Image 1: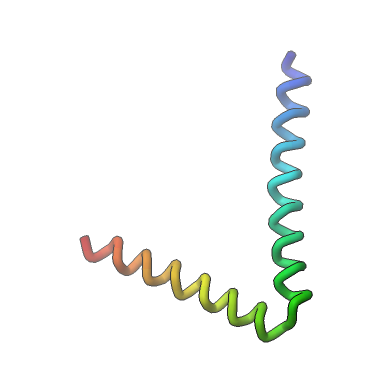
Image 2: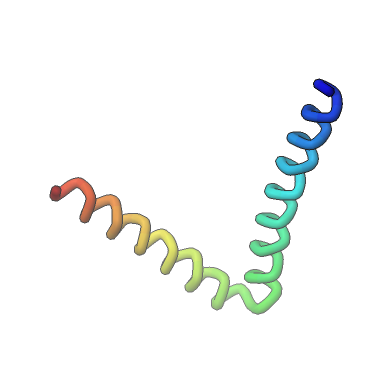
Length: 56
């Protein structure tokens, strides 16, 4: 049972990381500038949310 649990956890972890790499690859495949724009937009939203949370 422990072996099954370990294998299931490992597969879930691998699938999570591989899908993230695939998403990044697709973003940059669409074009370098669009990829840079999307990354900057995501960073700006994260900074906005952090600054908004710290004001409360």
